[in-house]
Length: 599
Image (cartoon, rainbow, N blue to C red; front, top):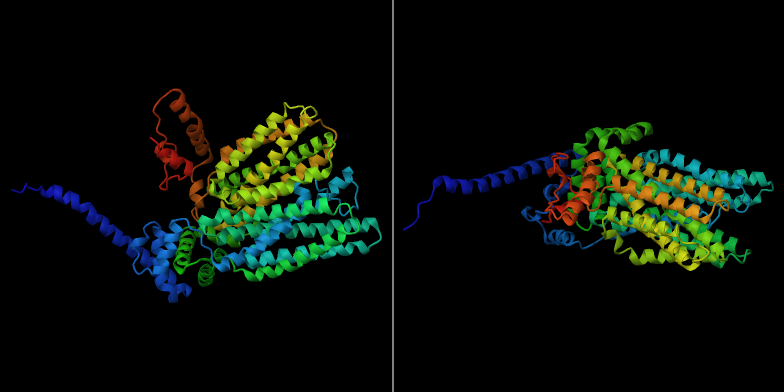
């Protein structure tokens, strides 16, 4: 005999399934209707079907099995992406050639700024190492840095990413030719004035191209590969540092050969670099920003391995611009209005604060003060400058070995770990007499230099290129690089002006205090950016700075103390469940999610 079935219970069990099916169908119809409205005005009718499938994937990337009509090749591309299998198209690889080659140029032209006492820069020997020479040699760096902060967003808006990179690379080559022709003048002061002028042009070109290369790489990369690809730029800079150190070590003894080889290498590399622009494709996000959605889709088709991935990314970009029309309309505003918006808009202000904190920490706690202490001890040990210069190729070798694994780590954890180890080393050096323990001091300083280049150098440029919204990314990146360069100039000028006037222990205490302040600033303001698309990055900065600081302190200190010291049962929950903030989109920091899943 069958048991009676409660009709109300039966309906209560089946009704949610019916509602779920209805909601699912209505949501799919709404998405397809919005996709049709997007296709019609932008001349994308020939790819309507793939755009419709891409729109469904953009709404829920994990549930791609509900999309009907997927070809086997499209399913294969989605499966590879879900399994984190990195597959890059040939056009994408060719588009990355120019940024990597120019990173090498940026490295060996910026070596005097990154390692100020290893590679002194006195305008080709025209100026002695006096205070006047020190101040004059940094005029090109400082003035060009301020100009580049204004020039980068202007040229990127007018000429696009490839046009701005082409202009910067041509300017670099022209500056190299003019600096070479400067030797024909007889008057020394004329040479100095022209050398400063040409150096300003060179630094402007290098700064413009560096900012644009970072923006370009961030915009053409898939989200899963952005960390690995963007670290190619600091890797190229490290190769440039290595070339500079190799020239210092090998060719320094033969003054008749060194200038000719250096000049020939300089002209060949800088002269051939602009032609590499022709290998790449314009950024799809720049096309979208200008309203050329058909060209944006064509660019994505060439940069991705499948049309379905290109359609999904295109519709994701379209959704962001549709929701942010107010910010999108600001793209033709003046530089001052765009810059002020970085400080007025709450999300952009938090992103700017995080990026500036990372840049200042990477510059002040980076190689400048560390290599100064290294050279100080090397001189005390009566070692030659060649020993100190060897740290650059060693660092590059470590960089190449560790590059495959480091980008997979969370940005915030890697950066904080690097700063913490550098702080511990500098604090230990404060209590080690350098003359009594010369070898341990040299080893610790070498380790600190390697960590500062590999850890801080790896994340600084990557973080600045990805945290700003698409509508203001060029202004934000230019501002971050400008602050980074100014901090490096201040560190380099400080090293030259106080060299020989302060004791080693005072220098190490200064280094320790700077590292501690940098560690605190990064801990309080830096937020995780890994595995977000560029359009989703603003969800990281929904929480206010005060609430984020309270949450980090509670998560990292108060809750572990209660759990492991007081032996209380503490459940670490995401921030929206703790009453600190309430948002429709939950805060999705990777550390918070992992901690929230623990009992």
